[in-house]
Image: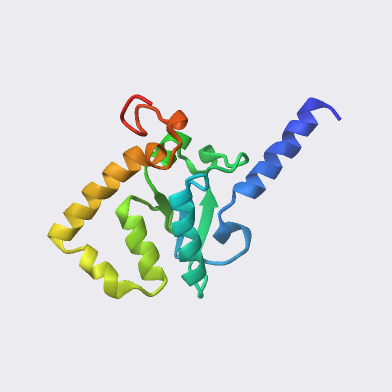
Length: 155
């Protein structure tokens, strides 16, 4: 098989694998979450959310998958790794704690979410998440993956 033909097959295969859950199975999700499946804390949270998403409102894309192509979503891998991202059906991107608020609302935990929007609590959560996101590779024992954006320290 020639390399051009193989390249086209690989590209088509990657495109199919990188489609969000809502695009690939015809389900209209309220939100598609782009998460780092290599992060044990992140993976555990996503597994819990997935289990609670009985109405299938959420789609999930593991950005650590070797076949994931961030350019297909107009993003860079570094940006997606820096903080949790999600995309709404209209193409709007949200990041950080707001993604958690949207996920929790989608699984019926709106009564908790309103508390996180109170000014003092919102500020504290946003600051805490920012520290976590910047240091999560170091926190989860993946120091070798740290860079200037992630970890913010010498690894």
